[in-house]
Image (cartoon, rainbow, N blue to C red; front, side, top):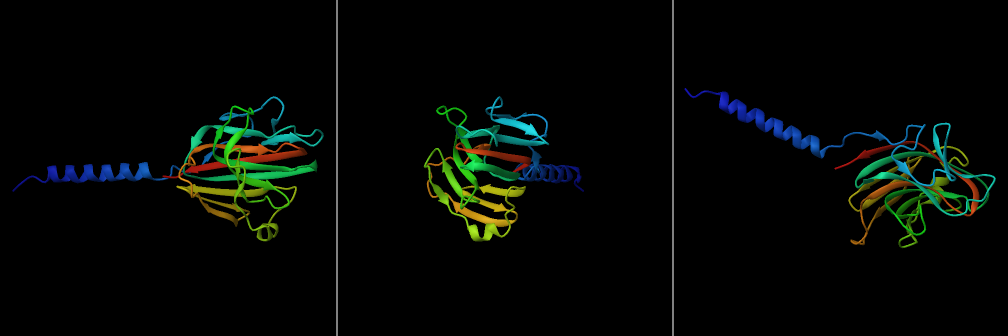
Length: 217
């Protein structure tokens, strides 16, 4: 009678290999990107534009016009992911606008700018659109403003969920789907940094908090 131990060893090794492969291909779970106290893991104009208040990143001012677009960006790159962000946009005059950058790169001129997809924030019809910031400089996916207006909380906190997989990007505001976009241009990078924008040209503040990312295979 042949010993069974070699067969058991092979079987256990196969199970271990399959387990490792599954772990490598699986999501590692959501990770918090803000601690409410520091800018660890982020960069941008931390001297004038961005500050931390009540546990949130705040960009801009209600007393002085924001002179130009400013972005708080991650130091880490992401490809496929689910991003969750709570945001609040307030403003008194001028162009009141912000946005969440995904798969974006920093530009050298102007400084602190980011080029890439921006899931937009602002009225009257920017909410939930995808704008190709500092690259093609146009809206590549238009949102259904009528549907968003039914759930949007103006001057208050709202929830963004942004899912990027392959060349497909989807976004939701307060659980309402805003866009479902598949990139047709193979030359457009599908990786990059995440970013938070306050737009220039208005007396405005863009608030962001509870930023969670779950990387996908």
